[in-house]
Amino acid sequence: MSLLIKNALLINEGKRFKADVLVEGERIKAITQSFNPSISQSFNPSVLDASGLLLLPGIIDDQVHFREPGLTHKGDIHSESRAAVAGGITSFMDMPNTVPQTITVEALNDKFDRTSSQSFANYTFFIGATNDNIEELKKEGAGRAAAIKVFMGASTGNMLVDNERALERIFSETGQIIAVHCECEKTIAANKARIIKQYGEDLDITFHPKIRDAAACYNSSSHAVVLAKKYNTRLHLFHLSTEKEMSLLEIKPLSEKRITAEVCVHHLWFSDEDYAGKGNRIKWNPAIKLRADRDALRQALIDGKIDVIATDHAPHTWEEKQGSCLRAASGGPMVQHSLAAMLELCRQGIFTEELVVEKMAHAPAVLFGIKDRGFIREGYYADLVLVNPNVRWTVSKDNLLYKCGWSPMEGVTFSHKVEKTFVNGRLVYDKGVFDEGYRGKELEFIK
Image 1: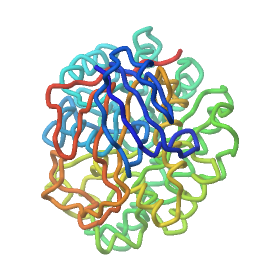
Image 2: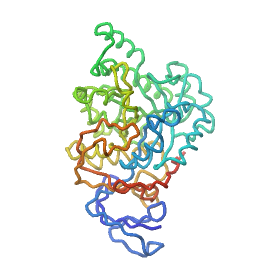
Image 3: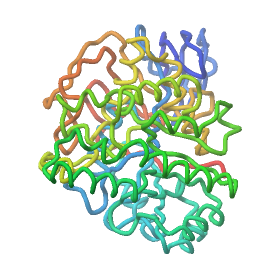
Image 4: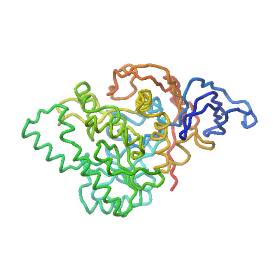
């Protein structure tokens, strides 16, 4: 099938310009400001007038927890990928802390198999490290994963890698990108003991960033950087949350970096001032911290120290989010609203739309070496998003698509709305209507 998207305002590779985009089958056939029917094999493509709309490359989210297998009461591949395409995300990279954990090649292959029949979006997975699965990480089949995920901080089960010899071997012997969650468990434990001694165990949410403080983050992330430099490892620092950690990063082209960094939407949107109104809804690990930290993250994104914007989408049931800061689950859903939130920050003058596209589409593709995605280019897969920049809408329970049924963004009014999402040339989401029969593809990598 052929589709001609006419009169859209493309935002792509640092530029904005009006153009027509011809899609044939799964890929982009042509990008032109004056469409000539002779370039189409069908000579009679369907025409979509996109006047007044922004056309963006599909968003690639490099960190989600879609909770399958084993935790599907919170979310699953079908439900959360459905929410993702409604938010303009056409590809996702899912984390290994499921049940069972994705710490073997067998478990990795099982996730690929089950996802192929369920996901609206394109997909890949991380394989998880433990203190004792180094040989599994070195197997040939482990290379099917996007990268190795290392929890250098608290995690479920045995996925906390706290053995120094194990860390040394992971960084020196595996040869893959090492993506890390960095929070120092010793620092967290000391903070927790001190605060409980002073205030007791019935602590409200405002204590969360004091327990999981900036020192806990920096102590761990700086350790990861030391290991990466020692072994010349490709290191990707997930969800940085503090001003101090910005000192670990460099300003230079992404293609020249061996150490890269991600920031999440919630750390760019919220600050500690929001705990009073949002409570446990914004309890994440790492914790949302001071306004000064948020502002430093925003500036580092603009400067080029931080490379990628992601969600760390991690749904929990509403019941699991209740209780004191020591008991309420950490994490929340975000894929349906991440692009809208970032474009709202553009409307506020904080970022440019070109920067948002760079950090949410181009950079993840370049960083992980994803083949033929992340850009609006001739010959690339037609992963495309049409956004209306002049529609005001408010997040409410009535329009949520997450299986968990709640969002930290409830009550927020956005000025941009995703109207249509194309995955591999297929219109998968169209103003609230889904192509329920379509399934995305496994991402391929340039090795």
